[in-house]
Amino acid sequence: MSAPHPAVAAARSAVRATLADLPPGARVLVACSGGADSLALAAAAAFVAPRAGWLASAVTVDHGLQPGSADVARHAAARCRALGLAATVRAVEVPGGSGGRGAGGPEAAARTARYAALAAAAREAEAAAVLLGHTLDDQAETVLLGLARGSGARSLAGMAPARGPWRRPFLALRRAQTEAVCRALGLDFVLDPGNAAAGPWRAADGTALRRAAVRERVLPALADALGPGVVPALGRTAAQLRRDADLLDGLAADLLAQALVDGAAVVLDVTVLAAAHPALRTRALQTAALRSGAAPGALAAVHVEALDALVAAYHGQGPVQLPGGVVARRACGRLSLGPARGAATADETQ
Ligand SMILES: Nc1ncnc2c1ncn2[C@@H]1O[C@H](COP(=O)(O)OP(=O)(O)OP(=O)(O)O)[C@@H](O)[C@H]1O
View 1 (tube, rainbow, N blue to C red):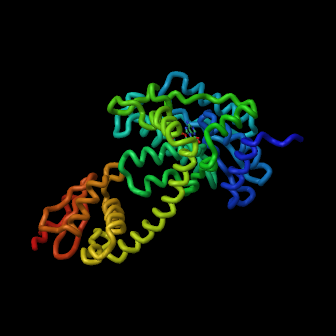
View 2: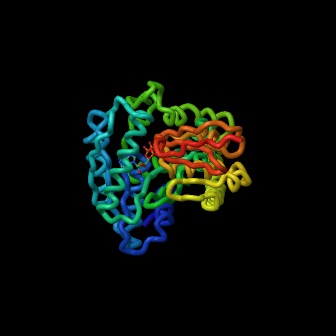
View 3: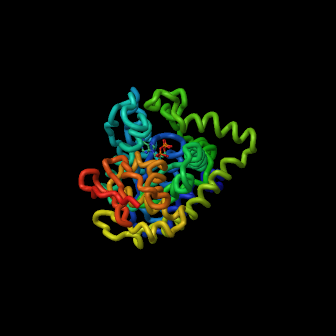
């Protein structure tokens, strides 16, 4: 038997390495959109799983956002079956449809619905892992998007190779390699129309999708100006910042535990917080805000900075309102965070 195409070999070994901790008999779900990345993933899983004793199957989510989406989903599932995987299609209802109501437009709404459907499929199949086909190119896009948003290290750390049931074996593979896998194996993949900047999924404000713009315009321009190593370099940035962010988050969790006077109501000792490094203090405050019910998608750096000012730049300022109906106020050396109505009323004035 001749050696497999190098891209096929790379894809198989990436899947094998990602699942190496799973015992024989473990069930694995491949999330397959029918695009090149996830079809190459399905092919690699279909090859590797039986040899390692894992039970692999595939699921395709039909977002129902474009005419013919059900056919595209059926086609993807049929490709997976031809590869030897049991495959199902799950249709989801995306709130707002392709009109894009909601904060992040149709792309974000579709993603939320997709991950919920994949998680449900994983629960039903009792899968130990769900494989996603994100590549190094996707990771580079994520890092650039985070950088342009003014995000911190956690966001610049990009997507995790493994987190909970989600595993991304292709984070070190280029998109060109997954396309090479499909060509080598004769798999016809679809081009996701939602991924095109000029495609039908538009952000809520009518601007072209930011990720698609980064993919089509920004990364090619960067590679042109800085050289082809820019995508792997962005991937390395993500990996390094992931380690840093893990360390800082761990230390910030310790700080929060030390500062917590009353966990149920999220009351913090200002003196403990004020003595800490701002990098840890702001992380601890962000966690405290989320724990007290602040809305995760809407809590921004500006809110955390206002909380930090209550600790480190206090001059008698009033309470800080956080998204999600949470209010933070300082009184008697304590910072309390909680629902707007139940919070203490006496502000500390020095
Ligand atoms: N319709 C779908 N059905 C099943 N899996 C999907 C579907 N769409 C995407 N996926 C999975 O997610 C991976 C990433 O897809 P894609 O790059 O389109 O996502 P995205 O738009 O970057 O959003 P996110 O990064 O949040 O998943 C795919 O390789 C595939 O594993």
